[in-house]
Length: 556
Image 1: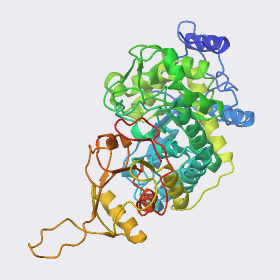
Image 2: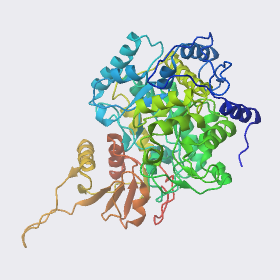
Image 3: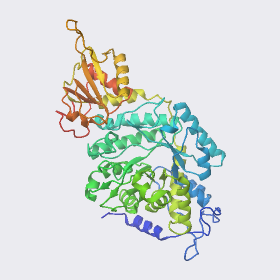
Image 4: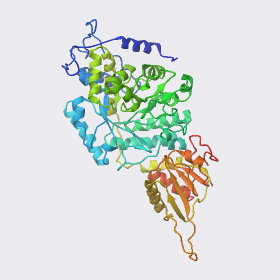
C-alpha cells in the first residue's frame, strides 16, 4: 500500500470527480474561453458553475512568474489547442514538420534517425520549426526532443560527438566526469536546436535477464545508478537542455521488452523502494524537471494496468510518494505494451487521467487530440486536469527558453568523451599493466567496430594484418599475430588472445581468452582508450558496474 501525502491525494481524488463538457464534438466549433481565468462552463448533469485549473507548484525548475505566464498563455487557447499542446509526435522525412505542428497545435515533436541527415540539416530543420511557430503567433518554444543516451541509443550520429553507453559512467564511478560529459552532450544538442533529451536512463539493471536496458543503465547497484543519474541530470541542465529521466518506476528489473509486450513487475513495493525507485527519488530530490513513465504492469501497485496509464503509479507513487511536481511524460504510445490495447485516443485520455502531462508519440496524434477533446466535453476527463498538464508543459518550455544556454559546435565534445571511456574501460582478466599485444594484431568482429579499431590502431602505430593465409611447407612464416575479437551486444562467448565486449560485459564470462576487456561503447574515444591499454600506455581503471559470472575479477 502506498504512503501518499494526504493533501495531494485528496486534491487528486477531487479532480477526478469533476466533469466538464460542451455541446459540440471534436470536429465541431472550437471556441475560445469566455472567462478571465481561461475556464469553460461546466456541462454534464448539472450544467452550471465554472472552474479554474489545478495548482502548478514550483520546485522543479520554472519560477512562479514563468508558471503564471504559462497559465495566462494556456488560458487563451481553445480546447482543441490545449489538447494538442500536451502531445509530442513523431514525424516523417527530414524537412521541418511545420505543417503537422501548426495543424494540431502540437506541444512538440521527437526526431529519430530517419529525420536526421547530418548536423547541418538537423540545425536548419529545428530552426525552421521554431521560426514557423513564432510566425504563427506562438509565444513559447516548440518542444524538440531526441533520444540521445549514448552507446547504441543515439539518433544523431553524423557530425556530432559519439558518447559511450551510460554503463561507462557506472564503471568509471566519477560523478564529476559524468557531469562534464553530459554537459558537453547537452551543449551540442542545444546547438542543433533540440530542447529536450530523453535521457539519462535511470533503470537499475538486473543483468543478462534484462532484455531492453542493458548497458543503457549505469549498473546494478541502486546507489551507483543514483549517483550517475543525478550527475547526468545536472550536466544536461547546466547546458540549458532539459533531461527526461526514464523509465519510471524502473524497466531494468523486468524480463520483457515493452516495445513488444507489457512487462510484469513482480517485486513488492518494499523491494521497489529499496532498488528500482532509488535513482528516481535521487533525481526528484535533485530537482529534475521531467520524468518519463514506462509501460509496466506493476503488480504491487496497480495490477494489469500499464504504469504509464495508472493513476496509482503516476499520481500515487511518482507524485504523492516521491514528491515529483514537474512534467510527467509517457513512454512512446506506439509501443505494443499500450498500443495493442488502447489505441491513440484511449491511451491519451487514460494517461491524462493518471496524472501524466505529455503524451509521447501516439500512433495517430490527431485521433489522440480529438479523443482528449471528446473526453473533456462528455465529462470523462476533467478539463482542470488537461489545463494543469498544458500549463506544466508550457511552463517547462518557457523556463528552458529563459535559461542561460551554453551551446557548443557539433563534434566539440570528443575530448571529454575519450576521457569518460578511458576512465571506464575495465579489465577482468590478464595483466593490469604492460603491453598486452604483440607487434602485429589480427582483429575480427562487427564490420563497423573492426573499421574503428583499425583507425585507432593506425593512429597508435599498431599494425593490423589481414586473415591468416597458408604458406608453403618451407616458406618462412611471419611472427604470429595477436588475435583480438570484438563482441557487440548480439555476440556470444568468443575466443582469441584478447576478447573485447563493446556493449554489455556479460559475454566476457563465457570466454576463456587470457585477456578480457569491456569498453561499453564503440565510439572513437572508446577505441582510443582500448588501444592505449593494449599497448601498455595506460591502465584500465574501471570496475564492472554489474555482476558478471565467470570472470576472475571486476577490474584492476
